[in-house]
Image (cartoon, rainbow, N blue to C red; front, side):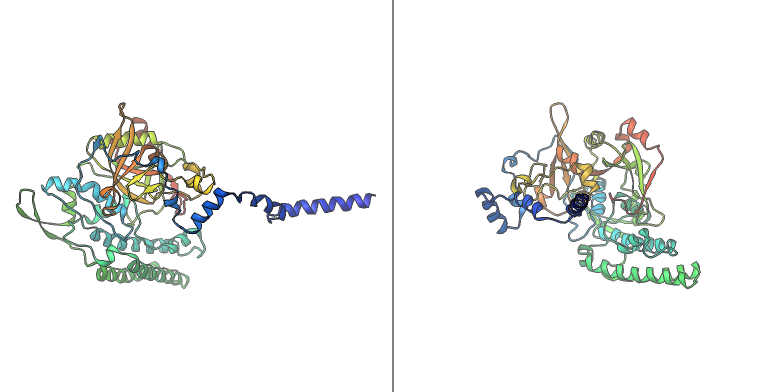
Amino acid sequence: MRKLLFTTMIAFLSFACFAQNGKITNKEMSKIRTHFKHDANTKALQNVLTHNRNIRNLASNFENEGKVDHFFKYRVKVTGITNQKSSGRCWMFTSMNVLRPRVIAKYNLSNFDFSHNYLYFWDIFEKSNLFLENIISTRKEKMDNREVVCYFKDPVSDGGVWNSFYNLATKYGVVPQSVMPETAHSNSTGQMVRHIQRKLREAGFSIREMAKNGKNERKIRKYKIEVLGDVYRILALCLGEPPVDFSWRYKTTKGETKTLATTPMDFFKGIVPNDYSSNNYIMIMNDPTRPFYKVYEIKNYRNTEEGLNWTYLNLPNSEIKAACLKSIKNDEALYTSSDVGKQFNRSTGILDVNNYDYSSLLGVKFGMDKKARILTRDSGSAHAMALIGCDTDKNDNPLKWEFENSWGRTGHNGYLTFTDKWFDEYIFRVVINKKYLSKKAVKGLDGKKILLPVWDYMF
């Protein structure tokens, strides 16, 4: 009897262990299949979805159509729409779009655009130097060191944030579009960047081998300069050489033709606000995964060796919205970035949390909040645009906002309207003059910076 009981217990425990080892059993499969009911509604949905792969269009919420317009009570005076084309330079376009109205006003122009090609040249060049410096500083670490892996995975790219623009503009200045026009490779950067990445990875590996073979730092840095010469050559061939000084001819709204002879740096200094500095213009961010009213800095997230890292003050959306509204009312556009692909209707240029009803279409509930989406990498900042407008109710509370985009005429003639609820869910960061912040927010700037690693989930 005892032997039978012992055998039964062993069999039960074996079954329990088997049932919990992660395998799908027939019993579990039977339960799973009940989620797909063979009724008329399910059959109709299957017929639709198996013959149309555009789930977004099928999930378009008819009840939400026509409920959001493109009219705004407060709007910054802007002119013209830019187009970054097949490049990841939205951060650069947005940073310049914020400044463009100042150039138009100063020189009495009907329209104006900066040369994004000029700064893009220096961006890739400086990022190449930073990559090589990062490899030199980690040359004694193992190849599978997490930081080393991050550097080799993405030596250079088009991506960046406002501090990337600030680092470049304060070092190299800016120029009008006609001084250094776009080229085939600035408009479509993929092939050129891949060849530069390949050269940098080769050089990074060589630096590590040199260190392993006992070469001193002086010889390694001599080699680094040779590599940068190769990078410069590729950039100059594909983008043209950036000017040291220039002569710019322009026509005013009065029909007068004028000429300005200057340097990129002097031109930049002449168009920015007097208080345009990293002490006054700061990045604020809504990151619900971390405590608010604290300052965070991402290690090595910059594009020049001596430049500013990506640094931000984390704030609740209520603080960010209040500050943004003040800036717009004062006719100052703002650099912003968001997860623009979420709930975006390209044909109407409207972003709203109710644009698409995927749950009703698929019969599956999607319920993550912003914090969960960030931590699981389901959502993150993907695109920068200028924030230029806000519409409010009778109590001056925001109802909707407006972006100036850099995708040509996509959306509502190049502009996008997003609701206040969409702001809560998908706006991530804003660059603003700190004079628009609350006293509590400004006080948070005095706190000690919290350093985040290169591989942090938010970035």
